[in-house]
Image 1 (tube, rainbow, N blue to C red):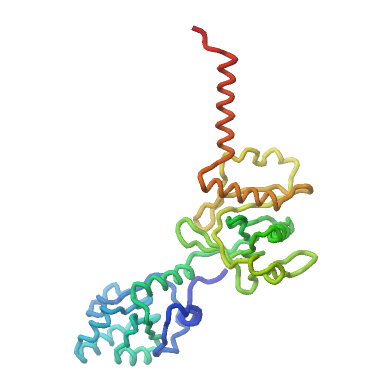
Image 2: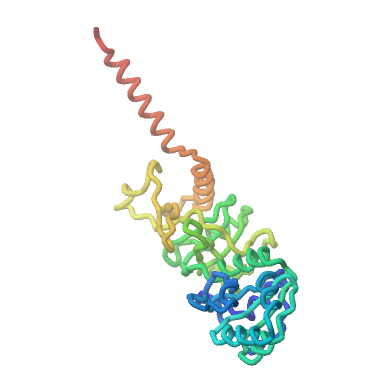
Length: 322
């Protein structure tokens, strides 16, 4: 399973929108960030280091920068020494402000990456918080195929050889989009949202028994794939068992759920046997899930209609006598 976290170097290399300029501290680019929280060390820079969140990225905005500039040389040196006594991942000055010389010298000495960016503090914190939330989100791996069907992120599960990839291939041919095949990386971005994606190595590829490894993007075009998708439906494909066929869902009134990383996701089990068009059933399930999200439950509506009909028939058959 991938280890949650992100290195300072990764942020610098992969996120040009942050407009980060490395001033010094190249030796610390491998520092790993394990907290999605951001710290503005204004209070600490006054000399109060109790509860100093040194494990977070340190953001120095206009206020912190102006305060440090107002200090005497001796006082600035004293605060700088105390500040760099702690282990720090990296320090970032916003608004394009130039770091004070003592900060540059100590960052170089300690091997702590020191950056500046032209972006304003509030905007920068918003951008980097989104990056950290995604990188540090709780995650797990699931065996299956994740495909976008009519806008619904649908996770196909089931034992090896049941036909998940073949079903997904037919859906792709019908205009739907592949997210991940075989191993799906799932991250919880909030208390109610799961995002599924694929590893860089396997992205856009699919294995079909008898054909081998296929590049779906090359075969069907860029519109046939996407890098990640919200998981809104789980469909488990299971071989048909005659002795338990009576246990399969027939009405769909009650919605079954499966929990992943503490998030409940609608769950459907579809029995597979010759003659059943599984891709069309998956399409229908995805469309039905869209209706449920809009507050429309066809099964419950039919049940209510049936109950009303039975009640009316009972009254007509047994009229109330005065």
